[in-house]
Amino acid sequence: MNVDISTLLKSDLLERYLIGQTTTQETLEVENYIENYPEVKDAYNKLQDNLELVCMANAEEAPVHLLGDILNELDDKPVVTLEQKPKKSWFAYGIAASVAALIFAGSSLFFYSQNLKLMQENQVIVEEIFDLRGDILNNNLKLEALSNQFDQLNNPEMEKYVLKGNRRAKNLKTVAYINPKEKKSMLDVVSLPVLPDDQVYQIWAELQGKMVSLGVLSETDRRLQEIPYTEDALGLSITIEQKGNSVIKSTETPVAEIELKLND
Image 1 (tube, one colour):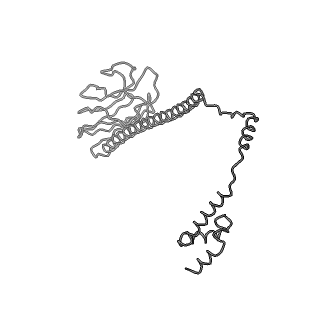
Image 2 (tube, rainbow, N blue to C red):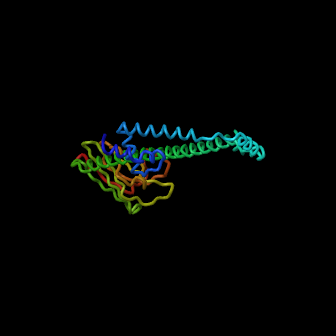
Image 3 (cartoon, rainbow, N blue to C red):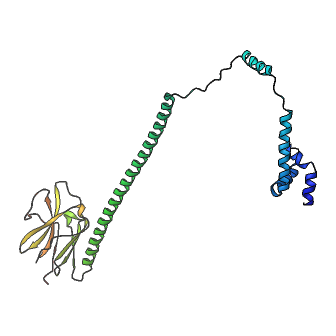
């Protein structure tokens, strides 16, 4: 037998361990021996059996009268009723459910309102983008038309004619551009003296002894614009006519006129 095991069995370490009087270190040591050495385990089991026999032999039966005294003592004591916790009624659960439903409904309404607001903002943005695209398209068309006009003005075949007003319209100035090869006519109204509300300026083309109307001039026409081209026109003139009259042939004296040299 191992010397350490023999020493352990001869000592009182197992008895003290059995009754819980060992230190932590001693407890660990005894449990290690019990687990790893069968002879130590057998000795420990025998000690347990002997301890149980001693306890049974020394046990005394309780006096009969002791149980009666205990019962009498219990009868003399007032009965204490334990207070039961009140159960929650269905009404309380209903209130809680209603509160939860209101919170859920409020949250749903809030998110719905936010979503509706975002949709409206998105629609506004879409409309603004659509309007912006329309503006860009219109601007591109205007730029394209302006580019075409400048191309025509730079054409070597384009002739320039300046119509200046007489004493009746001293500040009148209009520039006509005519290209007989491409049959294009353009007019740039530089300035127009103010007329009474019932009068307008009208431009004419002289053709084989008769006057052909090319339209009415106004302040809104102060831009480069195309006018009808008149084949074999001999000259251009501007008269002051009564507003609203559909004039076919003017009898008024021109306030500005110029001779064309398209056939030279």
